[in-house]
Length: 257
Length: 98
Image (cartoon, chains in turn yellow, cyan):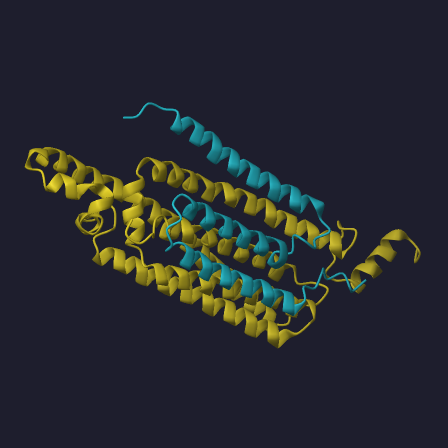
């Protein structure tokens, strides 16, 4: 009995408690978990892709309105938030490394730093959204594009219409268009940054659990798959922002244009 | 058996990638304020794609994984995205105005 394959397998399983029966070895098990996450991220690319597609079509169709609305976003704050997310990606990458080397406290510190950066990002985002509220730039909720028109007269061609009394009707139509079309930019702005922020909130939730697991010493050099695949998710959300920053904030920032 | 913990990325490389990403962000920020005409958008997207590629290859360890399917999933996902954007644009750009 003692040399039956089942007993041998059982003995081996006890020696390698993290290895599930249906995997040949740890590497296969880890690759399967990470591949599952990549499939999920593939669906996430398509999920955000739909919104990016709507953005692309309307950006081409209503370029002056998109450029003007983009200019009204806070460029410095947007760049700062990009930097904050890049820092959080570094701390995640370093936390995975700390787990691979079996350094528990370093993992916990790096994960806490990640949570800190994530929360800073969300805080800054809330501050930005509040600005949109005070500027009346939230679509349908008392939305007003008057300040966009005032600051971008040349871009919209309003200066020429205003100086010509015979074009009063045309001016009125143009202003109504700007009022409508700039709302499309802000709808997409809130949809994209909002979905991104929801992903960040989910990420902060996941990393709270991961930090707790790291604190409990659950990750070893042999097994730290939860940390690794949570890291993949976090980096993905960072990449979405890497594209959102130029696409939303930098449509047209040329001076005097 | 216990050394199956995947590739350990050197700390220095992680920091180097971080530094490149930070410099690239600053570069995007500055270049956007110089008038390059159409190239403003192109430069911004090239920088963003370079940053995304570095994150995928090093931070997400696609460069080191022994799982070949990871690269396949990634490449197919990006191809589907390009297909979505490209076909939608050919549709919308060839419609009558109004």
